[in-house]
Length: 270
Image (cartoon, rainbow, N blue to C red; front, side):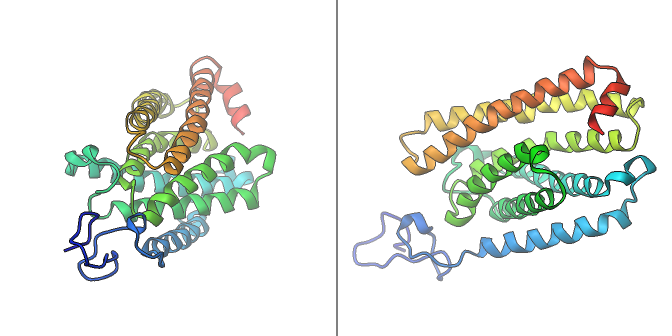
């Protein structure tokens, strides 16, 4: 009782970590250490450990041995995409009413899933920063910075988790983007498996990446009066950055996989 904004007069707000609490920091509760930060830290450590063990679990083929860190990096990214993309898809399938309130409610485990993704993006940011030249990785580093800020808000405030879950649907397509890189590094560009992956990759790109980003932009526009100005500004800037980046990537995929010879593609990717 009294946990929401409309609680009885004279009753003190209870915070989520107190018995019977149900409000978040945005409801006036004092800031405290968020349990989500522990999940972020645990996720960072887990993905870091996975990255180090992957060369033993999935040995690189001869064609990938001169770029071992990238082989490990892609497999780590694939593991995250399967976990987060599959989790987000399961969340919307099991809770179809989630799309009705993307701000204040979310299914069990959704907050942890977003926190796990923040940990992964932090780990991948550090991995690229340590192993790749800045002029080669600045686009992805910029992308990860935007995602970490946006998802971090959802983790800390325990609000907009549903909206972040929508964004994680993009990871369904990332599964096939990472598989494409793995096949390229394994020198399997001329196989039926690679061509099939190209088609599925393009289809899921349109459905789970371009359509999802368009839907998120529309949702922000329609709910601009119900979202705090600061949060709306962060979301709008994030969409303004992500949309052109993904359109450019779509063009690159079309040009590389459907309008260029396989040998030229493989040499360019390497």
